[in-house]
Length: 177
Image (tube, rainbow, N blue to C red):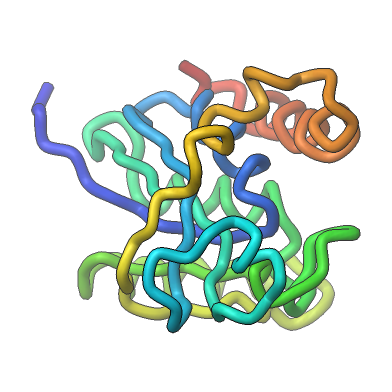
């Protein structure tokens, strides 16, 4: 086994949902919630939620490619959120909730294009996921990190995050830690 890790950066609605799922994925060694893709330096959660910074809520995954491939990470991504809704996931509406993949290398860009093309045959509506090179990463405030594990009974967690985690566990049982 190698100690080399890679980074994936994904936005698919509220970062609490993606973080909760990827924390359970075998091969993912670290998950952080944060912001990327905007024009305001070091934005706060309140600024991002106001929709004026241009940032998306994203997760930054550090993963071991010997245990989980970038392609596998993207397959999970396209399963646990709806990539066909522009600037929204369920009741979360705004550009901060857009579906976006920030790539860290030309290889990631190419893999993402292939996976997106394959996923276009799975979804009934066109995929609106943005694909772009990584930009400046801003880690979200500490209270957002590991949010679902700390607040599993909070309303949003119980009714929005928990079903996504359950879907991941059911669909990708062979990829659980």
